[in-house]
Image 1 (cartoon, rainbow, N blue to C red):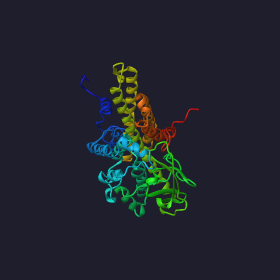
Image 2 (cartoon, rainbow, N blue to C red; image 1 turned 90 degrees about the horizontal axis):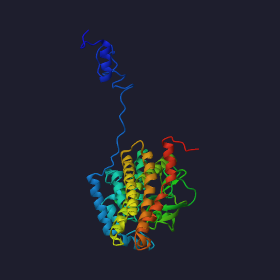
Image 3 (tube, helix red, strand yellow; image 1 turned 180 degrees about the vertical axis):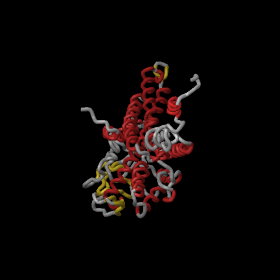
Image 4 (cartoon, rainbow, N blue to C red; image 1 turned 60 degrees about the vertical axis):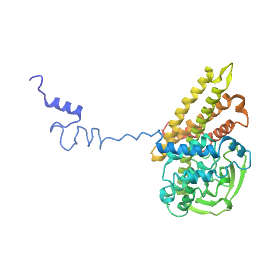
Length: 412
């Protein structure tokens, strides 16, 4: 036998390496390769890896960001927001009509056949980033995301027609505002039904319709039929109120099981996109801190040139990079209906909530004396960050949910 001669055993070994069938010894009917099944592995074939999340912004999203930022610069600058926060109501006249009607942001999640834009959570996340940057007093998260997602979930769960569809059309156009009558601190996995008056309902004062989870189902209750009692909130730009809708019958939208599942979907979307609001807030805080420390001089040099301050801002920038990835992953998971959406949202909330608070605290401190004044909007950012840290579940609650989702028991 020469060096070029091969034996059947050699051919079989070569086939095993290359994944090609070489002869009857492999056996007909096994498949084109040497494994079992149509692929080269064992079983019916190779399992496709999960799709990678798209963390980048599209041109459409960039255009939407520019439009929202221009609107907020014109209608909701820091001086205007501060002035309204000192009054009875922080909401800015005309802003919601412009945001919802002129830009169409309120209907981004609503399908076109119901009067919406037919976009996705990715576009809604961009809007929330800009609203977070400006600490804008608008019921976007509560109405255009949480309430809208709850009503859309009713359709996905088998109740697509009737009052829910009609209400979605009004929400998409911005003509109506709806909020979930649950405490702002309610986490996605918590029971949304509250016996008695519901405390700490966000943006109830701006609502036309309340979505009220009850023991026998989910109801749409006109806000005028409920008793809404405002409460002083830490975040003056997101008002809270106690809502008592027990004496208001309302319209039943779904039974108890369907209603709970729909509310859970609304809370999950709210928590996932709240991370984008926190991201936008943190970005503004870092930009404002860098701007101030570049312009402020001590000892005849910018204070931002001092190494200790540069290190603190560099660490904060690194945290922001991670927060952006987590927030974008959550928005993408919600937009694509990914199987791991709950896990991705939990990660985003654990990370973005802490990053926003840290960025706001550093902003207030590194701005020095001006950061402690009422006239500078840094305190609004800090209050929004601290309030959002416990909204839709605390970071600890999301950590527990994350551990349960990946089957990671707590240390004993």
